[in-house]
Length: 181
Image (tube, rainbow, N blue to C red; front, side, top):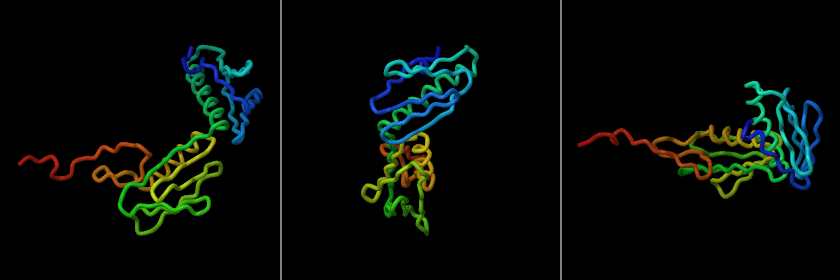
């Protein structure tokens, strides 16, 4: 049995789970999410928990068991509390500005870079060098954070660029860093 798949999911108050045979929808105070359940995986609600089981012990079904449980747990957490990913800009002259829903990045290019978030993801700027990405879908929040980081990834020699909050960038030695006199 999958260690992750057999763990029950606690359903917080204010969250409703609706199970239709191929799909499960989760509704909470922050919004609604839905997912289709693969064949061979079953979901049952008992009291205040959601249990995920599988029909057989075939390898593909075993793999989908833990995955389905993790996706459903992220949906329940997202509609109840939401997810947040934070980025910071490191570098002289690197800054970000909020323009309604979108942001404008100044990250050392000859032009400013505009970034519009997809639906369901909210961008918030703190100061001039910090971006907070909020949403109920964990995958969408992480994908938007990766897209913004891809605009100017951290330079391995100077460390300048866009990085996750608290990320440690290992700096490489320069041209003369490996020479001995």
